[in-house]
Image (cartoon, rainbow, N blue to C red):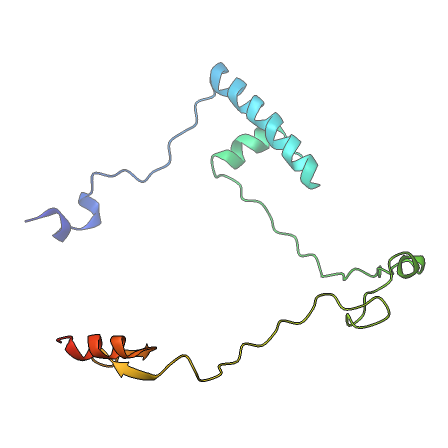
Length: 143
């Protein structure tokens, strides 16, 4: 019989929790970790823990209680200073008394004298033809 067909009672993985040994080295290590943890909690505005509470928390004996805080929207409203608009006037649409921001680009127009026609090269590849030599070259091309 293979292992995956056997019941969980036959597993080799132990799932029980081990007892925590309170040695001097472990206590010293937890004290330094507790100082760092309390420093972080103070920065975040949360409560500090004692050494016994911290040891229980690290080993999963107690879980933090979640406290419900109702949402309180910020009531302060930002208002821009009035003299800001006087010091830095708006440019507007760019065509006011201060002139245009940039000159408009000239439009490209095709006059119709350069391109003689359009040829199809490979399959549906349209190619512009400017003179008779190009037309002859494309006509001589094979597939």
